[in-house]
Image (cartoon, rainbow over the protein chains, first blue to last red):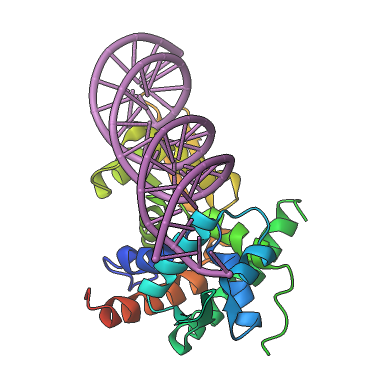
Length: 111
Length: 111
DNA sequence: CCGCATCCTTCACGATACTG
DNA sequence: CAGTATCGTGAAGGATGCGG
């Protein structure tokens, strides 16, 4: 009965950890839609997030190799974020979660 | 450039919310492996979780229709939990997260 | 056996002010 | 512009005790 998965909850959890964070989905959404985005542009595109938290979540995604941070040594400073090729490998999962989420909201009468 | 997804981060987030919770993955893992599990059995199978939290997360999964709770009016009481057919629809997502997580841990040198 | 009530801790996130 | 520093808050989770 549904073998496999042995001890593997932790592997699922490790994925969960990467994409868990109040704004990470929204960040990824924008990065999937646009190759390079400046920090200030992300701030504008994501109403409600604070500078501190946006920075933090972007850095976490960078740590995991999901996004690439590029600093242009100009004055005033310019920093651009982009999704990495590796980050794109998350896309199928996000798409499935998108579909499931849609069904789920319908099912629970929240859509 | 990667169209679609419009406004849909929230749909992904709604899925995320269902499976987010410190012990939910482990709970689902056990429920996928075994059709019916008593509460006390789950407690034993999941070292570290408290009664209060296990109850809470099971009830949340029940609310979402993922698990089915059956109370047998005996003395002493017996309560069994099972994954619902609907809950099984989560399986493909969890499997993908399993694979991705494995790759990710290898990639980041944590496996 | 199963679960609720109460209290406590921790941590993610938020608000605000300051700087290279 | 793109951060860091500091302080505050709430919700998730943990510990323990009582009860049907």
